[in-house]
Length: 82
Image (cartoon, rainbow, N blue to C red; front, side):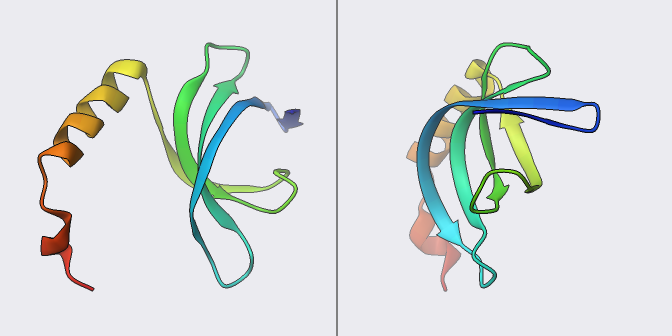
């Protein structure tokens, strides 16, 4: 899927999964996204159902994604509480 929004061009090259859903139906997704014809990066952000609208998110290079995974593997997530 390739879309262009204003000057921003993006293509979701691989959908990894949904990690949450908001009350308005938008889903927080993890995907590989190519921004402005650059190599795809790991991307975490909210998307509407058709992937035409998006919220703010974070985009990580391969090295940044590996570092995050390493941090999470050594973090007690239960300490977050609910």
